[in-house]
Amino acid sequence: MDFLNYRIKFLLKNLFRGLLILALIVILYILLQLYTPFDGFIDYVGKWPFAVYLVFIISEVVLGIIPPELFMIWSIKHGIFNTYFLNILLLSGISFFAGVTGYFIGRHAVKIKWMQQFLEKYVLRYKNLLKRFGGILIVIGAVTPIPFSAICMVVGATNYKFSKFLLIACSRFIRFAAYSAVILQANI
Image 1 (cartoon, rainbow, N blue to C red):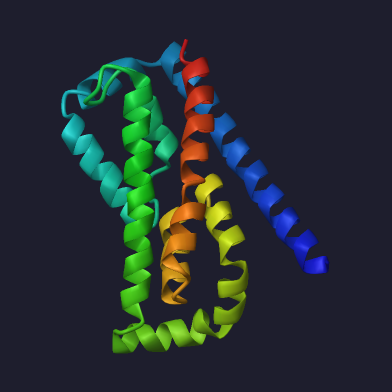
Image 2 (image 1 turned 45 degrees about the vertical axis):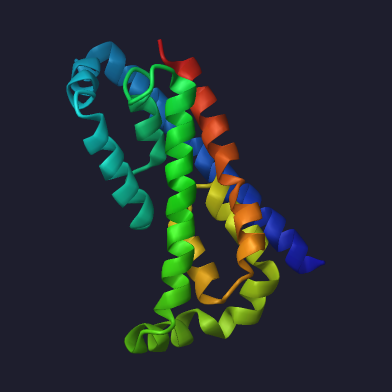
């Protein structure tokens, strides 16, 4: 039962961290809108939506270097679709499939000799725990600031059942729905 309490505390701690980061991004966004020509910068970047999506794809596959919330802010007025909802749906789909890509990277990384040594030393000793509790780890990666793709790689390296992974990884869409709603409301 202690482990369950630890998992809940870990999830709540990271959810709080995610909400705090979201609040900071929203406050910074509002301040930038009020006191700088930030909208001009967003409009300038908005001229190349495919380049922005490419940066997002690379960021999401390579351990989530850039917070997805920044792309949500960009997609309020830009993107390849005319509605914010469809742009967010595209971003969340890209993020989800970046996680799936991470899963397969992890699954095949164990076949590379030097990666196998690294994974055995740092990850695979927890293989049974990761297989048993990988679902909660996927949810935590999907809805908190912990890099989703990295979690997916670790889970893939343990040969976590793919069908379970896909089902649980769909929780990534919840994060995008909730965060994008907050960001849209903050758009003055």
